[in-house]
Amino acid sequence: MSLQENISEIAEEEIGTSLWKDAWIRLQNNKMALIGFFVLIVMIVLAIIAPLIAPYSYEAQNLPLGPTPPSWKNWMGTDTFGRDLFTRVLYGGRISLAVGFVATAVSLGIGIAYGTISGFIGGKLDSVMMRIVDILYSLPFILFVIMLMVLFGRNFYLMFLAIGAVEWLTMARIVRGQVLTLRKQEFIEACYSLGLSNKRIITKHLVPNILGPVIVYTTLTIPSVMLLEAFLSFLGLGIQPPMSSWGLLISSGVDTMEEFPWLLIFPGLALAITLFSLNFLGDGLRDALDPKAAKD
Amino acid sequence: MLLYILKRIFESIPVLFAVLIFTFVFMKAAPGGPFSSEKTASPEVIKKLNERYNLDAPIVEQFFDYLKKVLQFDFGPSFKYVDRSVNEIIGAGLPVSLELGLYAIIFAMLLGISSGVFAAIRKNTWLDYLPMSFSMLGICVPSFLLGPALVLVFAIYFEIFPVSGWDDWTHKILPAITLGAGYAAYLARLSRAGMLDILNQDYIRTAKAKGVSNSKVILKHALKGGLLPVISFLGPAMAGLLAGSFVTETIFQIPGIGRFYVQGAFNRDYTLIMGTTILFSALLIFFNLLSDILLISLNPRLSFKGDKQ
Picture 1: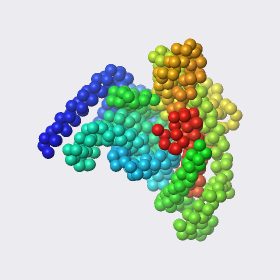
Picture 2: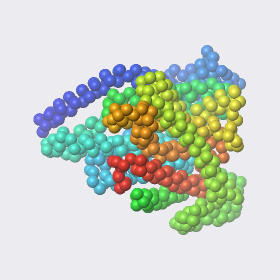
Picture 3: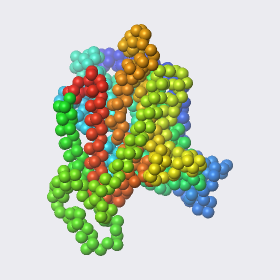
Picture 4: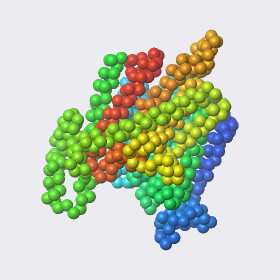
């Protein structure tokens, strides 16, 4: 057993390092992707340390001050309640990014589990499971998310769950396709002949090998999830004031954009820049990790 | 072919049924009712209301009553808009939404496909880089940001178009661009990738070797194959158009079905929500089927048996 493990581990390591090293070199040549990566890191760090660097409180109102344009005291100006917009954008980023990452993680979990089981077991179960995915694809999911948010209160955690539950379908398809092709390859057959259990084959040999496409698709799911959160908040169904998210800030910025355009411009820029960097990073990762994939 | 269509239609019946059950259970499980916001109403009034809308009957009976009506294309009375049935609201809102969706799709296809095809033909020149950068912009700037920005520039500063409403053609340009821009971006990328794929094929080289002119190669030989991914995108795109119409109709205050849906959701207007959800699902299934049929008839390599490989 120890010898078998040794062999499989050595083999894994060699394939792994060369693949990732290769991908890293290719990614370094893609300037837009690198810039996207850098901007994203800055955004995440800013969101994490927001309570430390925020100059004001995000909810304390200063009604006599009212809306003021950007100045040295308030970098992005203040909103109609006299709250510092820079602080609110920072805190909004916390929520928008958190929704993006957590909901994507939910969809990742469901998608990988579903796709792996479907592809690995195959046969009748596979066709039934994929038929279900096809059917779910043809439903207007956005309506169900809206329904969920309205009927069960605008719960923060429910939103993670609802969005994650909507976004797993494509992930399941990608994972299944990968598993199907991998399953027929020699190294999996070798695992069988070495007498490894199904569980071990799946967790140790299948899942690590499908990571490439999964990472790529994850990077592209995060922006669409963030868009969905912003969309819900824009319609008034997502995050509720006095909390802030970029979607919510944009929504209230739209109401007053004639008189106080900065209330729309800064949150809009924050969201657009983040989405830009995620998309560029995702495209770059796809070129780097998955050179054969179609570039649509 | 006919068999395939029939099979697909047959398959969609249980799906729609499942949607119906799902929405119904959802509504019943949700806390609070449509009349719970009217705090001043006396118990007798609420009882009357419940009787009128058949809300105090056993749930199973309510369900079958509703099912019977839906099968006759009757979605019942609206809870919030007294005197109006859901059918009337849909009848008033749907044509507006469809019109808006049509303009948006036309705008998206004209701009997206033409720029994508040109980008593929002039690969790695500014005719490629410029539209592709714009398409990235189109994907990253959501409609609820683009719409207000357009209003700010074209309606408020330049006063070319009205800010909101739905009357003559001037009211329809900004909403159509808002709704269509994201699709134009996707279509540009899809058609560029599809065209690049086809332009590298042997039969294109053969055509060129035989001395067929460049424009003829592209128009007669490459376009048909290159635009296949575009067609398969159009079916699912309808779902997105739907979601987009919520935002666009809210921004521009257009009396379409999307706006009624959002308001219905806020008001817990059960019958309106269920009616529109079922309608949307049916529409979506229909458009998916349409794009699949189109895809099969354009691509002889696909079989009629329903598997798309």
